[in-house]
Length: 432
Image (cartoon, rainbow, N blue to C red; front, side):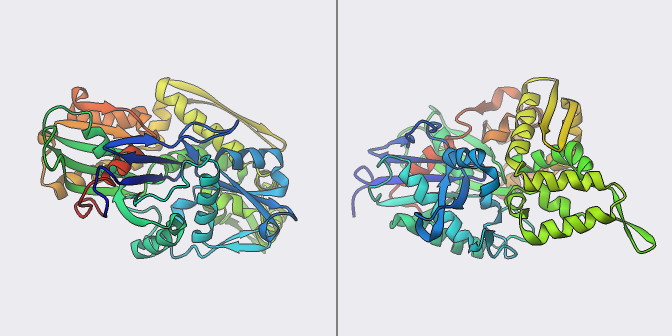
């Protein structure tokens, strides 16, 4: 087998919102940049779009990443857009997604996604690496996640690359990347805030040149992150206008509209799939019996007009503005739905307070598993897009002190580290 310095390893951070890959050789890691007018550097949106095309395989054409978004925006009525499908990887309740007249398992969605990602890499991902190191969350998203099922689905999905596959906790990838910047020994807490999960790992970093530069001590994770924060905004600003909390008439009674409609609406992995005959028929019946039929009409309009992407794009923009400003204006307008609201950072932080409490409890669990007290943490490295939220930063500054906090490579540090881990002679200490 090739030595570590001769080997070529691929690190792949398959994320809920974005995916990033890096190739390592000779002790160096380089991000894989994508090509084309729509490319966004090394960051590839974890999205798929399908539409009918007689010339395509199986009569369905498909695209991924920013190209999927462009196809969807060009013809939303005739396409099916799927984002954040990673969030159902460990769900035994998810069997398949209905895409027009076809059914796609998680593995099939993943394979289609990777095939298009490879195609847009302009040959950079064509050569077979000696190892592929895939990041995985410490704790999968969803209720009662099945880790064995997720592993089976991941194995089938990443078999596309035809190489030896290893799985490493995502924050450990970020830890390995961050360790390369340190010049002295340190105990480091890495906090990775993604779209679907928040994951924490504690590592002991030795001095440069040590035989074992990084030693993992303990990890913990929770299925709460950026998507949940988006849901809190949707829940407070959008869903009340679509009938949440309203009632419908059934014989001589008024009953609350079933919350299942709104749970589906707020979940990106299922929102795009609500545009099917059965769901729309149920909503039409609900509209006829609703005390406020206009509200249900607005929900139907959002689904029929495929407004989910634009709506969540506006929600994400509000969340990002509130990371830098004390208040921001939310505006969303389309045929059948108009929302205007001024939102303060304090309001947003109240909305996500229960989630922050659970995240903080998970940090404590990671410290306990590592056998480390907070005072023993020398550095805290925050990564992932949601680490930019002011309440997240404040949480760590309060617990560990601002002087110990470091940030950087919010979307790319995991892939860098995973690729470098792939060059290690013994991956057993890193494998999840």
